[in-house]
Image 1 (cartoon, rainbow, N blue to C red):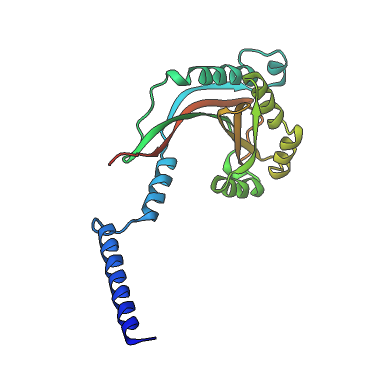
Image 2 (cartoon, one colour):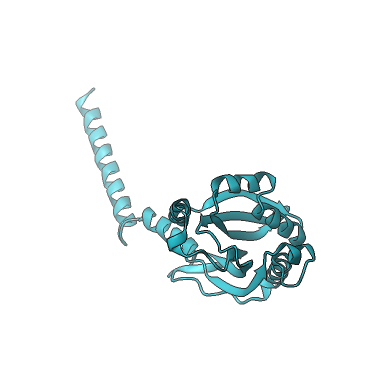
Length: 230
């Protein structure tokens, strides 16, 4: 390579280096672009999505109540709470999201069912106490389901909680002994109807002298990172 060409190449590389330096300096003028910070903000918004309690009732799991569809049966109570929550969610004012986050408009109903009375810890089986600790940290997760109506959803919840159907059998296989499951269903509008994601904490055994269950609903609106300046 001739000396003239070498000089031209050196001048070109020097100019390119200066251009990169100026471009980089401009991008960093207000501080480095922190992609991790953006990810952290998105995660923070997602985990702080505002949850608004709607209603809590006590239902009976007694077989005679449920066969007769008594107003106090867990089937009847669950149907009323679910219908009320899903029908009225759009009329409920959105709770505030955290700093730098804004409500996306998407919402889901959180539906929880748990025994009201438990066996004292001193009388709990070791298996149930172990499962309580494990599934509190990492709840059992089940494949998402879709239903055309609240009635179909409620029928599936009853079937699932009684160990019937494919997922019900999976639940009973993972939550054995006399350990009791506590259910949390996340219900949102899906393409084919109501989309339900289910998680379960399996642990302390309920006191079988009581048939009472606490049934509650809450509304959660998803929070996303604000598009405007914070």
